[in-house]
Image 1 (cartoon, rainbow, N blue to C red):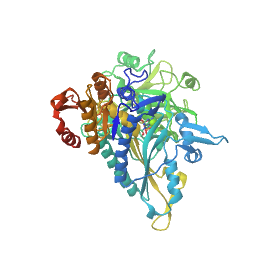
Image 2 (cartoon, rainbow, N blue to C red; image 1 turned 180 degrees about the vertical axis):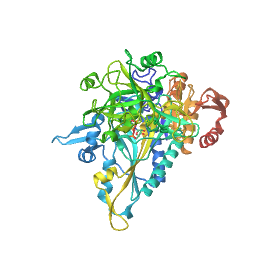
Image 3 (cartoon, rainbow, N blue to C red; image 1 turned 45 degrees about the horizontal axis):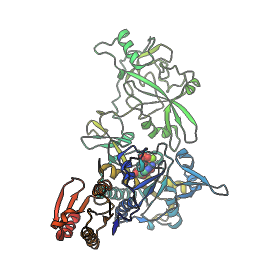
Length: 599
Ligand code: ATP
Ligand code: MG
């Protein structure tokens, strides 16, 4: 196919779009791939659709290779299935809801677990029908709190989502591993580096889950890796728990006056000045900091709780969000935020700056019960036998030598603090290093969460009804286009990897002579006949400078210049990435390009 720039619906722009924060967004708009319609919502222009199509083709081929079959659901869905799984409520503000003329509720689907489950339930009833994997490439809608970076976080975006259905856990593991391999192949063919990292499954529930992160400084996800090969999303990192200590010889705790010590720093200074420790000075790590937080439930409710963490660590709300739901025994996304003054007022037992676990020295007391009745969770480093300086629940007083498990207890253990560079990897493979990435894909072993809720049962080999087990697997298709542009650009424009470029060759005809356009036209035709996609800048009366500038902006990796050299029987073949140009005899051009493009 030949795309002629004289007729192609395209206007390249000199100016960056005002709202663009990252290079891919800027360049995709300027080079005429996409246009913004509303925040986080984009229109696709002819060039954009070419790239999108190539990305989708690679995904379809790899899905077919693992036997997954394509279907297509509507994006506009009735509320009922999402009510059964409770996600109508749990999604909170995250979804777009609407009503039809009769007042019935609908949503624009953010993901399709419910519909796939119901489809399989509709048509299949025996273990002999399984396993089956179905997928679609379809628009998703999420009312993201912060749509950003163009296609990277949209409110309408394209996802490839697949779902596997198996009769047993071993089958689910097989389906999961097939998808995992397919994903690695997809990203390899796209030319996009990804690292599979262990993840938590968040609102989806279920057990095993991995994210495919593309490492880049503009990524919103922080992940960690160790030299020994451990990789995980920070939300999924588990703390290496220190051993419990024998406290039988530990001296009794004592309450000391520590006026004006509402912060860890003032407390440590005061402790070193007034109650110095022999051998080594007190540090923040010797203190137990108690932080009052609010869990915002999917129903809109608010539960105040307290976490105890070592004073040298900061609480990480996102890490807590990954598991707080299970502590509170509520499903769906629970947000965690700092308690407000209003929250604190409702609990006068909490003495700001001097909060400690429920104090009844010599006797363990569960959490803060007795003083406030609030749920008390601790960081995994607070193990039995560890000794702390902490608030005495009285203004200007702290307790020294408070022993965990002897003097206080807790309602639960939660990953509550930030993961730091240098922390040990949970698998013993060395200290962790932090990096940033964009989530390109996510695979989950959902298990029976949705099939149970929606009643997807089939007859097993013994003729008994068994609940089907399920996996769910997503790839951000439009996000992949943006990530590819982000990973492959320079100050002049995009430099597409060959597999996804909008064309295989970009021919630029420069000059006025008719013979130039005739030669370029012939080369375009020959390449087309040889099976290549050709972009041909056949615009008359456009300066060479503008044409070159557009070619560099658009980013086809091979640029052929038919111009002045033609008088000497040569054309120029330029590599967009290196800028290197080679002179090639006109009559050898087709062969030369054939070798280059197929190589
Ligand atoms: P994120 O943490 O980035 O919001 P997610 O965990 O919500 O992603 P999933 O629900 O697992 O994502 O969706 C599957 C894939 O869809 C993601 O891996 C990502 O590539 C893509 N995706 C998710 N949200 C968006 C979005 N707002 N815009 C573009 N792509 C998205
Ligand atoms: Mg999301």
